[in-house]
Length: 68
Image (cartoon, rainbow, N blue to C red; front, side):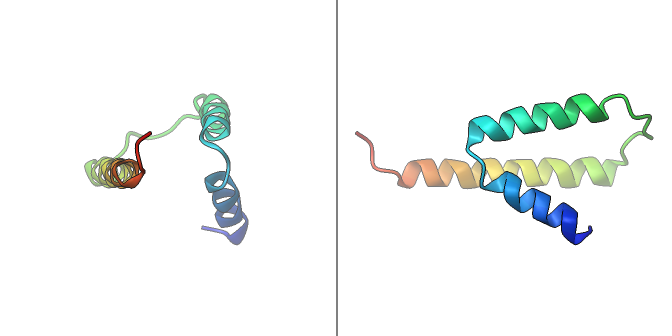
């Protein structure tokens, strides 16, 4: 991945969640018209694993926050 792409992802990561959702939606809108080959099983597995790890991390962070 190029350094420009890595910088883009770092900038995305520091956005508030609401803006991340808007940006992600716009990226999906722009790329949904690309013709792509089907994803390989390994790619799908890696993407699912990354998603679940991210959700687990968020769940842990939420559990550590004090409740009001």
